[in-house]
Length: 207
Image 1 (cartoon, rainbow, N blue to C red):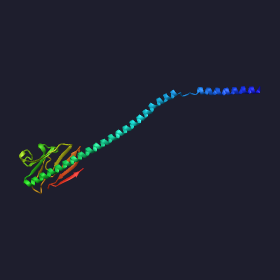
Image 2 (cartoon, one colour):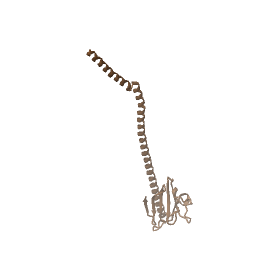
Image 3 (cartoon, one colour):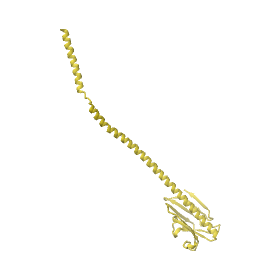
């Protein structure tokens, strides 16, 4: 009799334990396979967007870096080209001065160096001619040589002791040239100054 009662008590105890386990299993949320698939499906685009945003940022940085490098390279190339043009203009100007001075000594007559085409703009070119009382190169028969230049962003100014409109070269060695200086200007900045003294000596100062 006691054995039967013991078995009955044990059965009730086991039943209560299994019941609590079943209730816990029912109450505990279960992630079904389709839910897992949906969660993964929802997570993948977000991950893809994050990776895509990361690559886009890297590409943007690369593009900015390349653009900056190209801008710096083009700026440096432009500056170098302009310096080359300024040096070439300086060499041509010194050659014109030497030519006019030697022509005055060779011909025994004063030689005039003035802006091209009778203007007061030295930047377009120079003309060398035999001097006259008006100090102007208008007679083609008196013209010795012309130097015609393109602007190329280079401004040429002459500041002379006698005049800013012309340079007079004398056949006398002691007073060969009217003194003054040329200024080669680019972008509003003086780059080269070429100075002439009375005996025709040339000195060049670079900024």
